[in-house]
Length: 476
Image 1: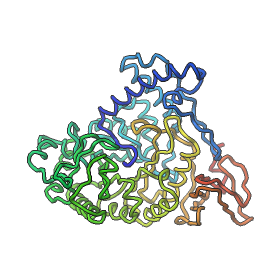
Image 2: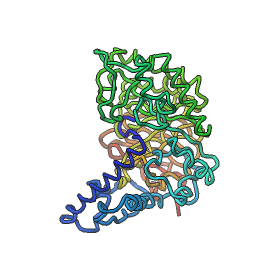
Image 3: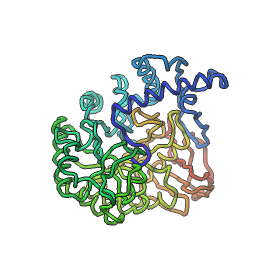
């Protein structure tokens, strides 16, 4: 939530089309100084794909070519153009899923709001996911995805604020008792500043004009539970859970996250978080599926124990700042919190390691950090986004490796953190500089490319690797 907010579906589509049009104009300028073979996404976004230093068995495809006259195309043609990018990414997904043996569990980055997937894309994507997030408007995609993976679970998107103009995307957009009705009839349900004005977004990472309800108001709690339960029924009762987005968990979070005024209802984090937990407990008792709370990043860092409290109260939590915005002193408490939770609690980790072009080193670092808490017997899911939540990311072959069962929890050194699996050891250097990791001389390890490793190794700061002890798990 803290970095990449899921916007109203139609707004997202329009903005990305405008982005393509504006960027293609920029390409005309760039072409004078860059050769035509420079990857088009690098031109569109102003970034090349970084070279990699970490061992890898993944080779990402070249970017697709996009004509310089793309800004003059009709919208339908622009959509077809973006489908080329989607197909480029989906081409890296395995035709045969590794779900039966891989260590990680995977969820989708977003809601496919702007770019509904084709049947071919669904056939490639669905078998590899464990669960998927959709907006209510995409409920018709569920049977199409289940056709290729009957075990898939589906989560519905619900915003925690109230945005005029939303349709089936927050509690105030389910029926005629909408956001406008609340403002007119129940203004006391909305947080206010010291002068009595509504706390309303000025933009930032939230939706401009969004109202922020008072989580401690019992009438708001009842209304929210009633409307969300109705939303589940109205969309066919086909959901396994709710993703509650933009859940601000600090007393000053509306200033930072939404460019809003300081709310005056709760003077401290302690008071505000107590109200948030009261809200989640009240609502979870009345809604028939778990609520996965997408937590404000600052609330995760300020008080890691709040993560566990929210997860237990609601049913699960999401983190969108892992690990890119979490230095060692913040990342370790979070990992310790996750591994201490009951295995049935749903944890959703949504990393953002790369732009549209992809980044092998940063993506593998994020994935290996996730492996520190991943387990087939735990409800801990991972995904990563590349530039946008709307479309799938590249798939890395490392995701498919059969690491075997985990052999325990994380071993924390000062900077080197490890976790053992039957067939490999995950080694993460969470510090900023090089650090040493050693093992007994009789133990033989290889990197993912099959090269022998000798103790000690000295990985660079903010890098990670797999130490493989069984070469048979590597692709031939």
